[in-house]
Amino acid sequence: MNRKTDLEIDAVSAKRIAVAAQGLHRPRPKGKVDRRHFRRVFGDTGLVQLDSVQAVCRSHYLVFFSRLGKYDRFKLDDWIWQSGEIFESWAHEASILPVETEPFVRWKKSRALEGETWKGLFELANSQKKYVSDVKDQVLLSASPIKASELSEPRSRSGSWWSGRSDGQKTLDWLFRIGEIGVKRDKNFSRSYVPFNSLIPNATFSLPDPLESESIEQLILIAARCNGVGTVNDIADYFRMKPSFVHKAIPSLLEKKKLLSACVEGWGENAYLLPSVSIPEKIVSRALLSPFDSLVWCRPRLERLFDFKYRLEIYVPQEKRKYGYYVLPFLLNENLVARVDLKTVRSEGKLLIKGVYLEAGTEPEMVLSELAEEIKELSSFLNLSEVSISGRSKTVVLLRSFLDSN
Image 1: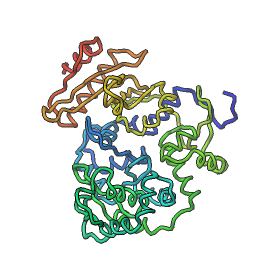
Image 2: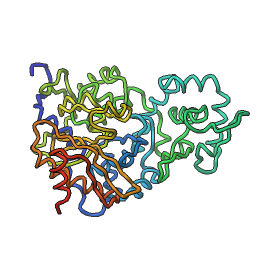
Image 3: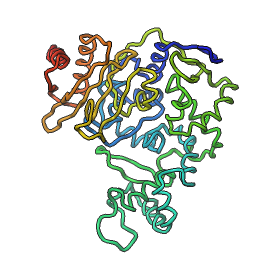
Image 4: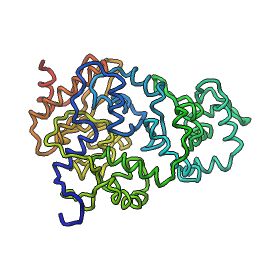
């Protein structure tokens, strides 16, 4: 460690800082989970990525379960979509964020308006301005949240134009990305569209736009807080910013002592962290993590921190998958010790374990006994009466014995 930095951090400490930053070291609530706990999760993660795949359940439900244990999903949905405290935006892909963050993502919408977004959306918006305006007016003039299927096709065409990647759906996507309209979701995760300003408290919405540089600095500080410790690329990935923006902002943040630089054992470049970060002496943690959890979504960082190579194989042909369709990393204390291919069979009230794979160097009995308890808790959270496991390997047999024990 010979680079000039404020701190030197060993590899184990870096893992502990990262796990603690995400709130995964906290004891799960023993009593009733309420909005205070939901707010705490956002305080630790900064934002939560949304995803439509529900092989187990919606990804954001898993993010909260990993940190809180069993809670009422309907109460979470009601709070996210009705409280006025949270809004959906394009941040780390489609995400939900605290409304206090809203001013600091406006610049991303301005850049999308100038073409820094999916090329097909930008081309449609500029080639069919009247069409886009007509769709926007329908949303803005609607007396209540309106679903895509309830909109009228502004052009003289027949057929369904509000599904898939139709011009209608792409127009809604464009208007969402540039901040003209907002999204609300129901218990089935279905989207309705509303004027964006109706989602944000006026006290926040009426704030003047911060300078782009100020917004980038704020997002960097949030990302640094939630990462615990991270490189420029790690920080940039959190809100999907260009690394060049982070590089440009870092010197000023270091000079103002809002960030410290660190040399982390085994890392090839400098890392950054908040001055308030402390290194936990011990991490006690156990969690099955969504593939879209903010601890694991940056794959290069995941490998650098935990020596854990991870790929989501949903789009890999079945015969070429190494581990399975929807594989959840298993966190035990400060280590990722296993991966589990899980599937919910709702028609049978069953949580199916299609595969379990231990990382090299782990203690099978310790890991599998803890994994069994976590799977039982997950099954209870999902209101599934049965846990089933397929296969006959030694790992499967041992896990089955722990699952069958009281």
